[in-house]
Amino acid sequence: LRNCRICKKEAIVYINYANISLCSEHFIEFYERKIFKILKQLDLRNKCILVALSGGKDSVALLFALYKLQAIFNYKLKVLHIDLGIGDYSKRSLEVSAKLTEKLNIPLIVFDLKKEFGWSIHDAVKIIRKPACSICGLVKRWVMNKVAIENECDYVATGHNIDDVNTFVLKAMLTYRPEDIIRLPRPILKPNLEVKLAGRIRPQFYATERENLLYTLVNGLDTVSIECPLARDAKSKKYRQIWEEIDKVNPVGKINFVNTIIKIIDKLDTGEMSDIKLCKICGYPTYSRDICTFCSMRMRIDSKLKNEES
Ligand code: AMP
Ligand code: FES
Ligand code: ZN
Ligand code: ZN
Image (tube, rainbow, N blue to C red; front, side, top):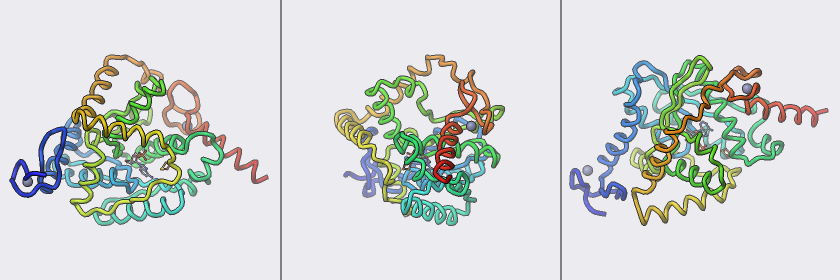
């Protein structure tokens, strides 16, 4: 580690893709500028952003950065924590989320799956034969959108980082799932209130996992360090290791990889949006089918639980 490129004080981090060393103060500036660049593409004055806070390092860093940038953009913040009902992991996640929102004085909405649906993710994985993370992801996306619409929020902000995105793309390619790449999460998705679809922002789209962690550390923020016990996706972890190797060979590779994909899919007209309808059951958007994927799954879980009761 050399000295900070900007102030010459002792550096705490070396950013390989930019070839700069930074002290904590200038790292914070560097990091927040990254978030700023995504947000400035939108007019956020008087808009409401619902921050999806899990309590993990990514979303904790996200909430804190959005809190600090609030004065520049003049948006309103609300926070959503979804209690997934996964034992101690969920207890600790709620605790961290409650403490942070209290400290920042931002309203926290807790959506407790067990209370709202009568089942938790823990119960759902025993019934639906799909990887826990894909069940969980489906439920989370539906809940985030519903809570945003009900609370008059224009956007949902999530803590996805460039390592998540790259791993997602690599995995989709290696398992031949071109449809996943076409639906690649983007930094910004505009709201479509006519079909009750809140907008999405992923302000950390170009931030690395390591930068998110460091941002929580330099700001003294508490995060959940235990991993979700249901997430046994060993493959994703291995794909992440492949990225570490690529990173050593070409530090700009991660950014170029995702930007290449985005450039290609932007040239495609997938026509997906034109197919959008409202689900006959929940009234939230669905693509092509009459009943959304979430409601179909929910019906299966409900009927299974009813059968077990009788
Ligand atoms: P994951 O799908 O677990 O990688 O999480 C991606 C993003 O979704 C996180 O950065 C959060 O913004 C959001 N998120 C994940 N879990 C929760 C939760 N239990 N409550 C609210 N938001 C969540
Ligand atoms: Fe979703 Fe563990 S947090 S499966
Ligand atoms: Zn400095
Ligand atoms: Zn539905």
